[in-house]
Amino acid sequence: AGVYANNCAAIKRQRATLLNLYTQKKIGIDSIQHYFTESLLNKILPHWYGTKWSFEGHTTIPGEGEIACGYLVSTTLTHAGLNTNRYKVAQQTPYNEARTYACWDSVYIITGAKKVVASLLQPDFGEGFYFIGLTGSHVGLLLKRQGNLFFIHSDYVDGKTVIEEAGVSPVLNYYYTFYITPLSSNNFFIIRIDSSNIFR
Image: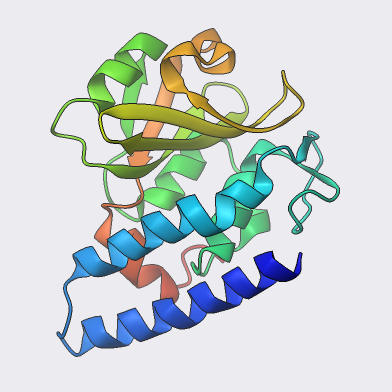
């Protein structure tokens, strides 16, 4: 837990520095997008893999207690330096959760798991993280990385947090309608979340 807490604190400090530089027009928004993606992927999420799933779980400490799918998303985004209310967002329906994370950007509604994979691997969709809501009550993150698509979620089938290839995910392939919104490439999400109250 010590390493993880240190990672979270360091990410928060670095994000503040980057946002300050961005405000002064010394760096572009792509620098903040890149830092968000890499810190979430390498400094936050690896600690959560294997954490037990529970429908009511809302632990803030990876590897201890249990975590529900919505809380995994909202908690890891909070720990990646974003100013979210992890309770209110996690308790929304998958579609409304997608709309909240979209911050006035698009929510893509796609039917069919194979179509999700095919669509997101098109050049129109950039690399990085996406939120995905699955019809019913399941949510997670998608990661597009070097021509591959991964599904990261608190998996009620395996009973733990996993990262897996999206195309062969049993959970993803069980559902039919998906609500997807970009995170890494959404400027409102990356920047304005720090100074707005939309997540509160």
